[in-house]
Image (tube, rainbow, N blue to C red):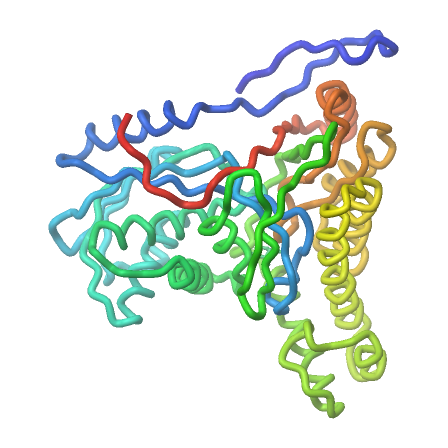
Length: 412
Ligand code: GLA
């Protein structure tokens, strides 16, 4: 991992060490995966690139049929895949140094976590009436695991895309998104569709304004002149599928919808619930359920406001919405952790940062920061130093680059 000595602004005459996440060149990563493939297997594989994602705003709104504003980023997984010519699949996860051989009959719990996702895709394809044959190949990349950047959606969607190309399965990207989501459900996370849509429909330099009810979307440019979007990885990893926190939140939302319905209001999801309808059932639900539902209603409204703010170049509003979103995630939805709260607190105090919030499912991972461009390096140095002093953890930052969604790559 690169780390470099950096002096901050002219006014602060201290030097500090901070870590900028190393940017691996995509072509180099592709070559590494390809070399890896040829060390293990014969034949000519196809190459697939599947990005991770950020989400500007709209957290935990997707499974409530609300709005989200994600984008695919330049951190990605590369796959080199071919048909294995047999029922068994042999997949190598370069980053873990593990190779696993399995078939549909292999019990999921005998596999390492990463292989469970691939196994789940085979199971899902079979349940949908296909007869997928075995695959051999290698994958790896630079999406930090457990950082809220959807490495699992990249794995699932990249693999579905690859197997579809190799076995002439004529799936649309919408179908691939649903298969990817179903694979996550099979591994234990009752997620929405935001991650899969971002990974599959991402477009260079654009965010995806997605209505998770109709699944209609449009693209919007994500640019404020003179400002940058920067991720800070707290380096506290989450394991969403392994812990109950995420699914538990989703259940709370569903309970509130049921209570609203019992009260005579036609509601399919929290998207249909107005603030008055929520107030009307307040005594019938727990305080925790009330707070969670209130958060979702407010966060959904914030996505709409953020889209307006982006369109009008209203950067102060955009920054405030980020801070408000974080407060909601912290106090109402209760999915933040002290380290992420600290990063946002430091961001609030920093004159170069207009807004910041935790992104993704929560319980660890990254904050997304809207930062004055000229001051990115100095301000990150300040924040990472203070974070390290308080937590003992070395965080890292990387400026966001928005890229295309899943695609085939040509061999170099
Ligand atoms: C995870 C899930 C998504 C979404 C986010 C929170 O990333 O996979 O479906 O719910 O958390 O917004």
